[in-house]
Image (cartoon, rainbow, N blue to C red; front, side, top):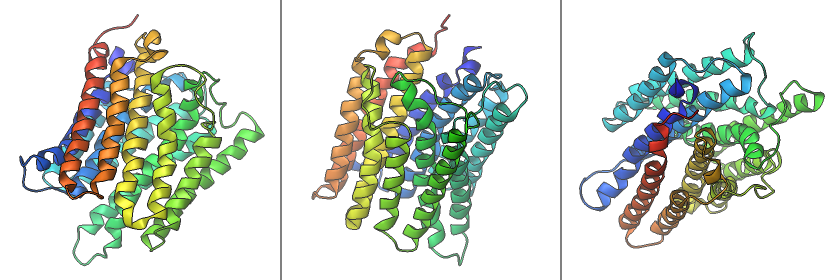
Length: 380
């Protein structure tokens, strides 16, 4: 069945729908359709539902192909999709324990799926060295979920929520971006796939280096929560720059044509820029971090998803060109980023948030309208 071999057909559209839930929150408040808003709801739905759906869609598709093993089962797909929906639905009514329980369950399901394919007897290949950061991302997610749940209890110090959100909103996908980027970016640029982590002494040394990067991200989050507001983000900016710029060779522009490749390359550099700006100007921290969230994480998610979809759906001509829907996506995401950055410098803060949300929603809707019909068709 194509949806088992290519589960991105399910999880990419689901991720867009979940993102609309978290983003439309600001548009509805800006136009007066709702009278309350929640930054916690917005942040957690975007990172724990939308971004996780895209990550799951990619990993469930890519790992069996890398390891030459069986595709994901129907039960695993149903369980992960249900957990994502529960995360978003429970967040709407602020049932945070259920949100974090479902979120942690996603990592348990994903981890067992990966372990069985990489360590099983039938595995034809091992992961690349950069994939050592995937377990670090899982640790950030599970640890962050536990801290957020603990923070809802009486008499618990406030740092538990602060560190929990840092782990969930930054730690998970900084690790995933570097880890997955080490595999995806060379392939998108037309290069050879990275070797297995046990292919040579050099690759085994890379495992140690990537492991140190994961530990460095975690340490920087802890130090930031302890008051190192400038140094923490700057350390993460250096780790991302090294991990993607050098480790994934993103210091070079994409060698192959295709607008989605350029968007992914742009997102790679917006991540450390957002972190650096938030560290250098702590008073501007929240809008600066949206350079990371909008320009980095979400633009990379859609760029990589575009590459996966076009490659698997026999649309290589579109992959080498400039599909109008992908161009519109990139332009509107940049507009959304600019509107969000301008909000804190304006006298019409929520109006700017509304425009930013509208631009993001329209861009993602155009992208989904372009690819959704292709997700439903069979490819020989």
